[in-house]
Amino acid sequence: MASSVTLEIDFLRAEICRVGRSLFDRGYVHGTTGNISVRVPQRLGGGFLITPTDACLGFLEPARLALVGADGRQLTGDRASKTLALHRAIYGAAPHATCVIHTHSSWLVDLTLRGVWSRDDIVPPITPYFVMKVGHVPLVPYCKPGDPLVADNVARMIGEHAARGVALRAVMCERLGPQVWADTPGAAMAILEELEETARLWLRGGRTATPLPRAEIDALCAQFNVVW
Image 1 (spheres, rainbow, N blue to C red):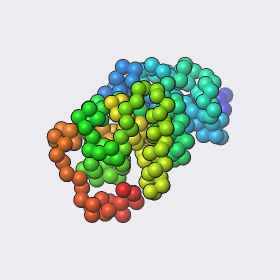
Image 2: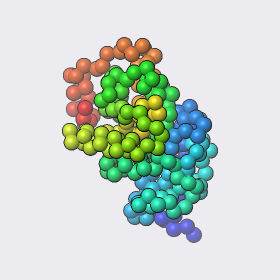
Image 3: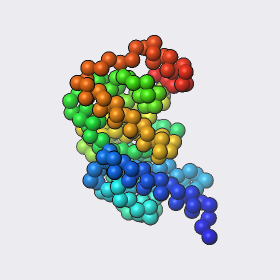
Image 4: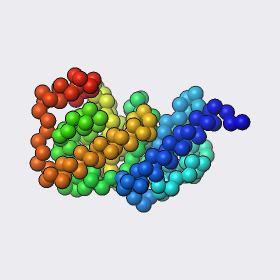
């Protein structure tokens, strides 16, 4: 009979595969782009589960996910994604994060090619749900995939926002795609969806939509206990 620890780990593996398939089926990822990781709770042994390098998120197999120790050493599964260092940097800088998702979502990548709203906020706060569910999303300057400088930049951005009392939920890597994080894979996927939809709305409107007035943003923050 499987232990409770084994069952919980199996559930985390299944959730990664479920979310990966959902993202693939709906076009948020293509080919072998993107990756997903989960922080394994200490009571289950700690470390991380992460999708393998060059794996298609639509066809993940639970047993082949990479299990990595807290020190970054791979323990089981296929070879871990090359973005492991970036995911570990996010977990280290954002204690609330237990899942990180990276995609090459087309509207968001397109946005960086045409020009973002600002480097501190890639899109303006044009909808209430963007303010409530996503928040500020800064642009990470372009670096080649796997460059350790990206991890340093993201950790710095998380720290700078935390110092202002703002908990980032996402950043956008120029020409590559978003990194989003939350306390569950489903919650991280929801943030990604709202971010991609906001980019689509803004681009489809010719980048002419005006932000919500500050008074309206303040009202949302007061009613829904968010910080902007």
